[in-house]
Image (cartoon, rainbow, N blue to C red; front, side, top):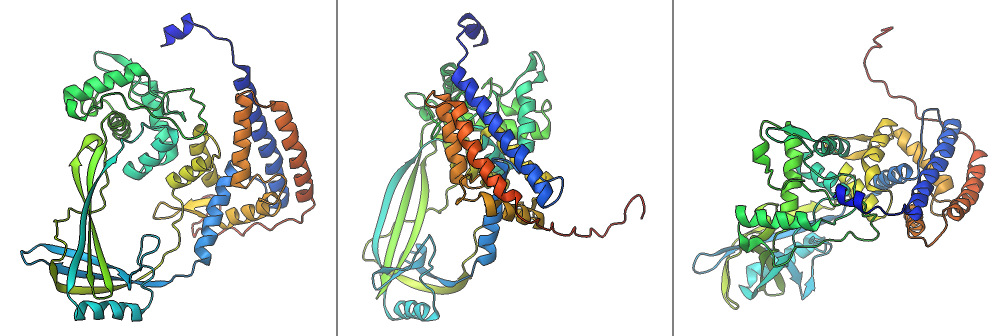
Length: 475
């Protein structure tokens, strides 16, 4: 590929150059202006940035949701019932008088003991009769190969790696390791990419490898193609192994433990992306006792497809067939009170996903943005590996929200504003707008907003918390 590129040189695309220049200048205009403002108004050593401040705003907004959340009680009513030939089912109350009791995936409308009592009364006074049993097969498409953000998310989810650690290990795999008989060998393609494109020759080698090692039955007739949502810079391929025949087990003793974990993840995901869909049978059993309706769901794997290599994460269990009209004998009734829970704090992976979904930032910046929030003391990671704002983070976000929120002409802490700025930069890259005009329009609004914030009174920084440890120098 490198030799071919050298033989076919192209002119430098100045639209791309200007878009890159504009992005760098915007980041510096925001960072170099807001950071001194925070020093003046709160304390020295603080920083703000075009993407960093949006990330902090998301964490602080989620914390406010959690603080303001009021739990509500609801109940789960479960009945264990058996058929005459010994099949056992576990059904949950689903409706009363033909009205669904479920909302947002939970039985939130069973919200009083009176409703619970009504459901139990129907079960005790009427036969539980099967009203329907349906099985529907569904096809689950193979997952796409990794791009930067999805690699960071899945590494955090499946092997507990932070985004920064993931990128450091990926850099090592990209730069190469010494392999017996091969010398220094780069094991993966470039790891900073927002593209899902795969080189045709890599696809064909992968498909051939799957046929030889696994089965031709799981290889689709044509190679699976993927495209990133929205605009993609597409400067690099998706993240994949450079040599698909270098299976993880063949690298035992060569790679470190972390390298092996991450390489295995990338290798399996790439192979899975080139396999046939998995076929799942989804079963639904419904039954009624008087005015009360009950339901049980089940899932069964019919054809493994890509799930040979990547977890399918089936949520239901296999469900034995039932006949419409048959009566089930009630064996047990369980009533469990639950309380609604506030939204979960962001993990590093889920914060990155929101930034990506909102169109804020670029793949190469996500890991460093999260680490900057730690380094500045704006957020901490709790024992559940979730992000919570510190008192300092709340103070900084509060100040920025006061002057740079969604109602401001320069709303840099608003996800919508920042996403629109990314779209404007993409327009520059595509030659639809001029980069200097973009910067000029931004700077005019931004400086007016900064002038207003300059007149604001200082905000006291939170007092430092004692650590309980003695100073190593003075005791």
